[in-house]
Length: 198
Image (cartoon, rainbow, N blue to C red; front, side, top):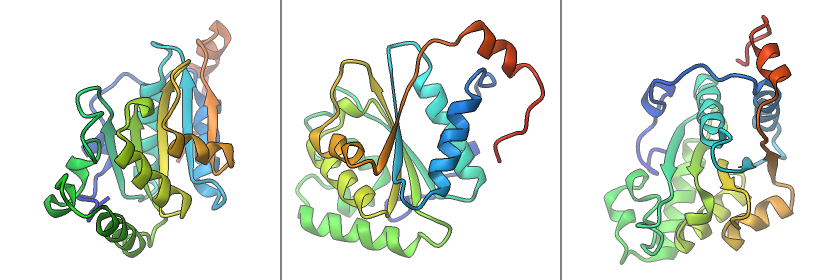
């Protein structure tokens, strides 16, 4: 998001990581959602330690390789009560000001995303959606619902996402994946040659 601040590349978003193992089906589902104009995002649900963030990072890398503008934010308890605290590092300083007029912020972000969407909506990864502050959740819900931003999110099992975000997948605009532990068969299958996700 550039204006929702700087354009990021796969190298600029992802730390060095081990190769992803055994999640080919989920990556294929993400790629299909990214190519479907009716889909506005993908949220990954699962218990702690199952690999939600790792899969989400790989999805973001797929989007970056396809030429999408990408961004990443991790919701935290510390920023939970700060308006736009989650998105502050992605917004220009004038928009990230907690005292800024929110209607103006929403309007400017939507305008910027429309201008920069030539290669498709920007893609943002939000890790730990249940910790998103209410203002960021409202902003994300508006631009995702309008098709101006494609959301990748992670949600730990049993933790509800903010109502504004949860409403998106209740309307099926944002698809949901329930991630379980990898089976031995999935790990073995991933070691065999297969077509790469572009």
